[in-house]
Image (cartoon, rainbow, N blue to C red; front, side, top):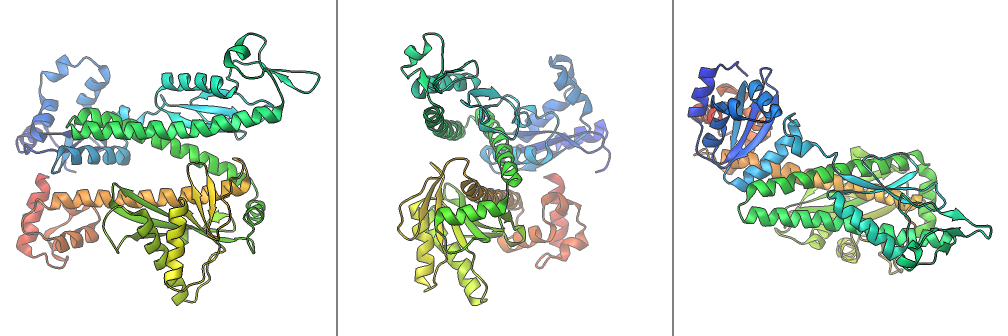
Length: 490
């Protein structure tokens, strides 16, 4: 990027449009140090270059950022809602040093249970401590979380971090030496086995609570956006994204624990638990991802001998319909996958897993039946209680939370879920780029797609010469010159 001086910046600000968009503040080295959104780009960005602003800003951090701003870029969009979405994507991409609200998730708490203890207690932590503990969360509101743990103590009779249980001579444990047991209404003397039943019930409740609170934040964000309160919606969005990022690290941590175990032993146990005809050395899992029916896509991930086989991962766009129907989407992609394998005379996996319950399992089975293909063993893994559902009519199965066979299935399912969501995000990002090109008159959908396919992104397109633009089918010299001028202004 060419070096800018104050005169050039003032001229650049004067040329800004009165349109919604996102702006990227850059330092002398061209590094993005702050990303922001604006209802009116010209009004918002111009405030950064007012001489009086540096004098009145109270926070040292903001004053320091203002001193570092050497240049800026903008991306115009069609609405404030689109700016909100794009801002979040760019912050995640560049991780600017001054976007602290979005990148700092240290405020989120986890609940830790040390499984080495005879009677594991529920403690709060901000980090995953070791490989012997189970973690829940993250949770956005520390006050709500502490209230929830207190409620769990009353409801299920579990122990919190301050408890000091004593083992009695008869092999039982005394939980408290004061009146708390009477207050909570649970037996004060208990065996380890009975306590672990309490613990599992509390863990199931806590897992559901984390998802419930995340859903509440998402609903609050949507309400704020619908009311055009985009600053408030952005605050909810930042919290949601940071929670998801922390949760993703938690899942990766759990996967690492799985990686420390013997995958062959987990596969053997899985074969026994599911009564499979042979050990499923090849497994494939499907997941559907969409946002309120938009950008509906699917993923298929493969495991070989208990490990991810990423060369075999596949992504699918839904072709047979438009809308929100997970079952039809599952039927379509499963049918496409195994019709192709059958036509190629390729081997089927030893186990197929679909992310979901009975409806998803039924949809996957219809894909085989409608094409007259004999299906391999097929199961569903329902998230709510991690219930395994069989396609052959057997009763659902629930394995213990730390059963290696279940954790292998969870690893497989989580890989499919992450792969589908990343594809969905890519499509949304592409749609945002296309929306900017829609403002350029004389450029149809086919030409927009061709340009994006050739250059991959708007920044790379801006760097292209007229000759390089003319290499794209349908782009002539006149159009290329107009496009260069247009991209310089956006």
